[in-house]
Image (cartoon, rainbow, N blue to C red; front, side, top):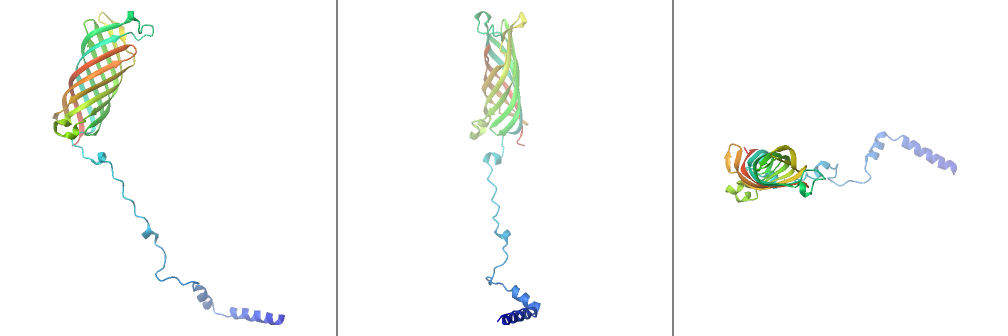
Length: 245
């Protein structure tokens, strides 16, 4: 029996060994499972999701400027009417009646300027500075400082001359010193680092080239622990806008 199995095994090996290579190749090339007609390599490029459209830009980015845009420069000058009161900037003198000084009504002037950007036709933001002086019968006051500057045109959408009517706000720091006319080197009222806010209205409908001009009226106030200076300020302002062309 063992001799019969060995003979059958040898015959099988010799038969396979004598088969031509092409037959082996043909047998290995046949797929075990037939593929459906039309199947083939998958083209991923055809099935890739299309690019999503870019998001719509906000209206303020695409709106065309009609009146103001880009770099803005301005200068404001006018007369002031004020009353200054307070103490020397000395902890031993503040709030002590014997060192209190009040100038009464004082007149003078102030100049303010700014550089900024007209973000839209109806909103301008910038940085500025100011300086000025006041004089009463017995006292002289000088002051200067820096501030943020905002111009807004809330009625712009009404069109026409309403586009030229604006509100302005200056907010920052300032310093003021008041002395007697006979002793200019002695500070009777010294604000130290004081807060300053100016809020006003203006009209800039007089136009030439890229300049817009007109009158303004502003309430301007400075205050600190040692000084208080409310002021009425009126005058003329001139603004330069780069655009629109």
